[in-house]
Length: 637
Image (tube, rainbow, N blue to C red; front, side, top):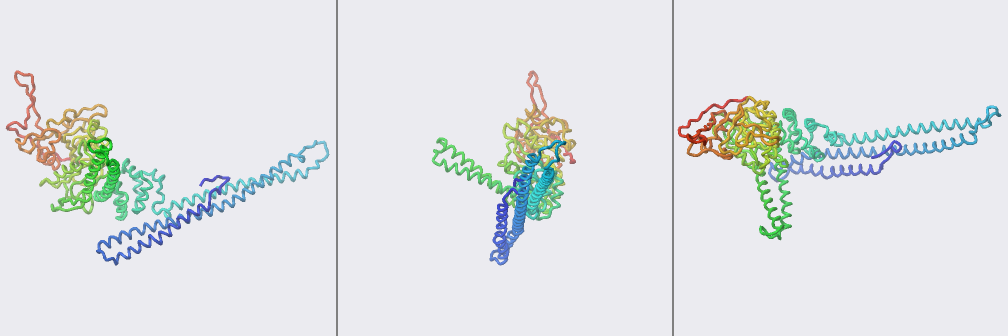
């Protein structure tokens, strides 16, 4: 309420009391209806005729709401009490201000009269040689009255200052109560302005101990909270320590009420992120379903269009229906991620274990981000089990989208399914944001930004596993991985497969602060168009140096479509490296598990006698070719 020093009682006490009454009525209604009904429901559930499991679950759910309702009731009653007290204080200040105003008005009238008198007839001066002043006594009386009046006005000014202080104190007391724990529960001190000054690390500390309802309210009042975590993610090690200190109830509340943050927060155990991302997937489904509802309105509005041969209304209807079909496919995929029964081998026993839903480590529908772990997570730690010896971090390439991500995961799953006596494998497929599409891939800018995100993801990966980690970047994913290495991504080995480059601006392995000395491998098949432009850069155009020719990289052979079978033909082009039985796929797997790999057989240029035309040999397709095999070097993060 706006008030001034000379009007410290500004405001409507009865309006304030009306607001207090609204809050008290709300508290009374919650107590007599909602709270009573919840308590009755919990009691009735014990005697329900349904199955025991369902009854127990329902009772637990209803009982869990009671404390939150009680917090709201207490808050409303606290607000009502604070507002009633504030109204009384304002009313008291108004009464005092009226009295001071009357005193000031009277004194000002007296002052005006006395000044007129003192400067009027009685104020005329006489000559020092004249008779004694007959008005001397009256003059003395007037001067004394002036002194008293001026003193009164000074006292009035003091009273205005005192009333201003009283009003300020009343305001402060009311605001403090309305922002207190009694009023806002654990949300006290978490206003929008206070939160704006906090770092994301500081925000995490404030979230400790909040109920799911309180977190929901906090997020509704501060919709930019999730964006703050996206733009300035906290240190993964600090998050790990913070999460470990939370009790189970606090962790569950955060997963339920703040899944968009928890599901994508490095340092939170993967198992908890998987739980949170099931909520995020459901939210994504709801968003897609809403889009379908809107598109159906377009279909309905254009139902009289003349179809594929018609004019504008027919085109609009057809395009809307095509979008609906695509969105339904995406909903089906999201539902599979959340609900599908998936089997993974137990690293300890080798026996299959069935889990519900995929292990989604990152999911942000609105920001086109997803990552999936192919393998079983430890049910105790929530992270990669100690029995997993090798983890592959696969970064796919240009044109990867949420809709096409499933195909990238299928590639990763091949590695998990391979039989080996060298250890157990887990795979992560990562797409931490919008990937370059089509000609966007010419520029390295987007890949560079994604590399920063991948490096931060790597901080969480280091905490989640003690296994040896191999980075696998394909096409634009190679540039993304290179940018991540430049930003400090820790790996034991790095493989560039048909890579766009080492990362924008990177020309030397020494530019990788953590992985400069770990083994780096590269593969590229003959006829891959990226081989023509790889290594070229001009400003933002290009993706850094070539992994094929830069010192320190070990180039491997992409070989045959059927590994070891010359008759199957040679792997050629950009996509054939993913043929499941190819030499290239086996090379990737052997790099990951520290097996044996085949070095690149470099073609030799031969000039045909009598001709200036050069001819390049193709060693692996020539009779008697013998591959050069070497053991994969171990790395150290």
